[in-house]
Amino acid sequence: MWRQYHLEEPAAEEAIAEARRRWGPQGAVSVADQFLHSRLLVGELRSGRFWVRGRGSSWNAAFADADARVIQASRRRSVH
Image (cartoon, rainbow, N blue to C red; front, side):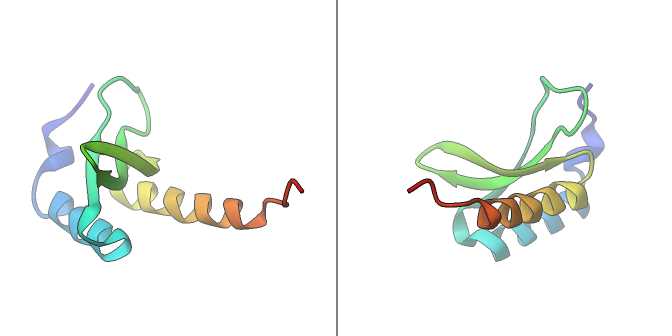
């Protein structure tokens, strides 16, 4: 279940600042109520749509997931 502390200061403010540092003015954070685990989302808000870059059970875990996704994407081989 969603908890109010996910968006309490200063953790959420620090997460927003980190998202904006990484992805510019579009950097944003969100909470996904429909998941039991890894509810905290970090990513970009573009054209009214939230693009998930990482998710985790804490803000630090969500940013670590975002880092891991970038590393995994860079290791993928070209299809052609």
